[in-house]
Amino acid sequence: MKDTLSSQDGGGRSALRLERRIAHPPEKVWRALTEPAQLAHWFPSEVRVDLKVGGKMGFVFPGREGPDMGGAVTELDPPRVFAFTWGDDQLRWELRPDGDGCVLTLTHTFGDRFGAASFASGWHACLTGLAALLDGAETAPGDMAELHEKYIEAFGLAEGAVETVEGGGWRLRFERQLVRPAETAWQALAGKPGPAGTGAEAPVVGGPVPFGFRVDAVPAGPVAEVEAPRVLSYDWELDGRPVGRVRWELTQGTGHGARLILTQTAPAEADEERRAEVLTAWRRHIALLAAKLLRMPG
Image (cartoon, rainbow, N blue to C red):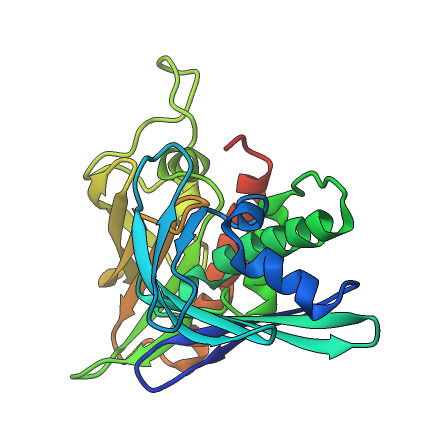
């Protein structure tokens, strides 16, 4: 099993590549890749396809009557290559004979790099289902959330980045797909409110920043903006005075849950050593949040 993520081109698109050996000949696997009746058992949606280059495709997700997404066949070389567009994305399935079986390689090209762990864990489950179908067996879905977090680490999506901004200073940014919805993530960050004196106080403008939204390396001033369960920001302090802004945002994600975007601005006087310190602190803090969310119900 080989799963990799790479940059595809200068346009900001990424390529996810999953490789699996399947103990069945290419001709048999080809039918499972191209025949709608077989696709229905393992692909994430119902597939309608005019199987020829340029042929139209429709993808109908569970609970819907018509296609939610369209596409077209871009390459067809039975029983070797089947490629098509899937909305704005590109999927390419390649079969290579290998002894009495074959090697299946899926390349998924897309624009949302930070959705890669969602796509990888989803396709991992689909390919497990495909193998089970060919074996005539049944398979129960594994822990998708745990798998998702393993892909986050494997693909380097937890690292964060720091960039120099015009006029001096720098800006730190983390973007991470979460495995729980915004409401659950907000509860993990702010604490669960309860009757007076029995639970966490809901954050308010001018009030203290809840523990879940801060780290010791970034001294926090009062809350500057709050819109539960989506946004919380505050000024952070250096030598006792406000010097930059920390902003947490929980936005629409890629199916598993909310997308977390954390930014911190800083002046040039916050030197490289401090930059490295806060980058490490936030990375650890977000990793602890991700681990906490795994223990919370979806």
